[in-house]
Length: 448
Image (tube, rainbow, N blue to C red; front, side, top):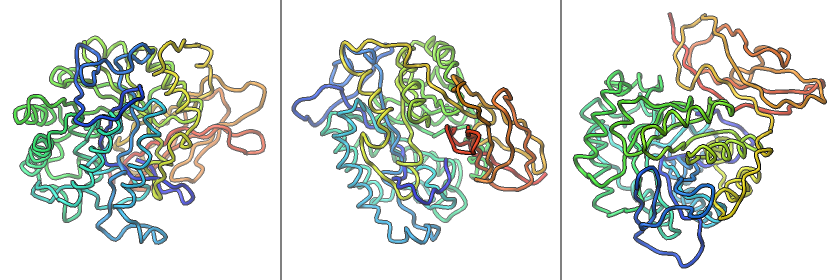
């Protein structure tokens, strides 16, 4: 969901989540992930036993770990990209990620935003049949995760995979694609796989799909989840909501767990959002939150304190080409915190939450607007450093579109261009040096 950054090395996502226990020891194969009440178990033992994250699935989003682009859109300097080497680089780092508290990796068989538009990255043919070379990489990753006592959340559909010759042809093909994926998981007896039907099912990008109106509806998502269950009742399934940390109640009722994203959720709202979802009595899992550094550490801690498994998405490192999988080095502050919360006996210090953070709270990823519309861009800036004078700047497609003081909570932005617009907020000092940067938000602007 992010733009291409020239100097950032990243691996592009295929949505699969690998879940690992926080304990060390002899590696096992044939692990089985399960749910009892509102907690996650591996081989009938509660995950992260004795720690603040007991029963919570701590995960990291690596959707482009199985990335490929069969089109001609790869940036020139990456024209020699090797999908096999990319997957192997990630696999080689799985033990390190697990050692720093990662229970799970999310991948997607249609990947994620690699930093540029138009990538043809999908495990499906247009009729919903599976492409063997792609699924071989996925299977290799799942087995590698299993050897490290980890599980995989495998996401099927990603909003940007449309308008090319492998795009799914409509409702029947979409259902075939899901059916074939579930049958593949069942045939391979992958006990460490959790299914996510759609990534951010309400994202406006799905409206570019044939039968997209059905796909973004709660009725469509309910049909798909029920289809998956009818084929493989033992498979743990859900679909994911947007970055506001919420999921439709009717879908929550069908799903085995509640999957949310926190990209656009203010840190001060985590407690109330999670409390609302936990009323379902099912495990609550965030598997996408692109806050980094100290803000990422705070997001991790807040999620665990409130009973939600947390998922880190470092889009500029792991998801934007050239993809980099550096383990702990990806983000030392965030991984230090993740390791702490899965450590038995760790005591939470609430002072760790008093970190500065800036995020865009409106609009959300995938929101659709009309050309020339004047939109109020709302943001949250908490725990600012009051010892320095700072400004807030908004950027649209990396071009500065406005500047204001720290007391302001909204920008007005005239949407003068069609297409996908990437928004971000930056806090700068008096000299214009960047102090903080918000996660990005991608919106869609169409003709009147």
